[in-house]
Image 1 (cartoon, one colour):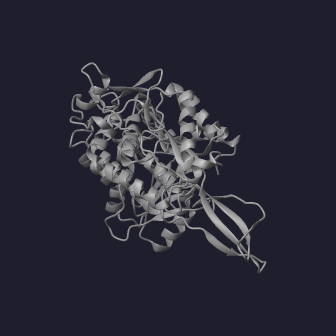
Image 2 (cartoon, rainbow, N blue to C red):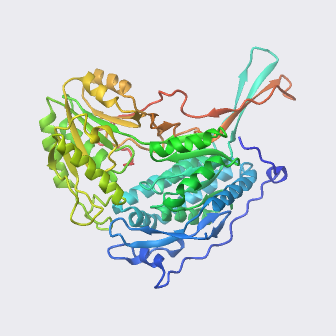
Image 3 (cartoon, helix red, strand yellow):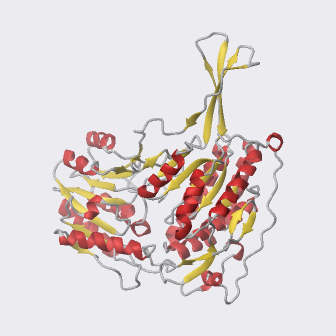
Length: 562
């Protein structure tokens, strides 16, 4: 837990709102104007949500340099954003630390009320927020709108959880003593988020932190900073005090040094990161020197198993939902389709028909679009590499297989059959619209293939055999399992993986990872503390094998599509 040195301000928190921020007024020659009206893009934005500066200590702050943000669909420049470096990161941490001295003492009821106001503002501005997501990430508008609701729901959920932080009284071997357990916020949390869910990955982390009494410094992905800055504007409008929520956007060039600064700053008590396993390992190394608490949601390589007993139509529907959301660019997307030999041909045929019939590639602002662009040229090159490698080793392209003619960052939804375990698409996370199908014969073979990866975030399987369902659900080495279900995420359930897919859990109850448990022995008169405090991390992850299993009660899932 961070120890606040400014004891006077901790004693009687006086909350101050940041001064009203000026609305962005794009000129004709201002790059920011493009995000409001470029070809087939968003128009009629609320200019107050379009921010290009960092947000530190309740103020909009510029940096010595800027970096461009591009629309992945057209390549157009959306705007120039403040390129914050190490000095700005240090300043943001100091602002968060100073704010923590008072924020930690604010009542749970008041923190709950402020988070609820932030949620209400997100709902009021949901259309503009969705347009920002589509503009900077290329995500289809329907999916962007779904993400905003999902994102806002985290603030609603944690506004309610803020008032449910309980301590405990524990009996000890000595009759005249009792152990009093208190839960307290850990301090400043550094939040590093990815581009594929530029709003939801922030609120899932920040909602828990603020509910617990922590303050945050957010470093959004360089591809999608506008969503984080829009959330800052709404947090300010909601009355979140200065310094409690800070945003420091930066370019890819500065990302490494800014990440290191956040992970090594002695005033930072917690690191929460969503991104690649390789980057997570680097951040863990930096955080280890000062033994910071960490939450890591890293790469996945999700298996999707279809057994002979499965309902093929349901399995195909689940495969479509699990694979092609956000053009295959989600961490829980199915990456390997393992289909038992008795049902293989039928599944592949129906899967191909569904892809051709239901998926439409296009600009995210077009109503018909279900598949937007990949985030950048590097992402497309990786997809091309995986497809060409599979073809060279004997895979068959059932449908798709190449870039789409609409633009350089678009790739056709692709289905591959005759895939083997030695192909790149079987060994690495593709993060694109490619569905490779591997045929298997026995349950043991399928589980062995699924568990061969060194990561374990999510897994899915379809079966109507009750005994098999229990066996496979428990044997899959992943943090989350979808049983006859292709959509597994919800704010109420813990989210996270095992192996090299990360540490800890996010979402759900108990404000995981944002609080410490303090235990103090008390005499029977409860007037003195005997012994020293023994802080222990409070987290949902009680054991490394914690697993969330999701199975529908009805044929139609009621879970949120994220």
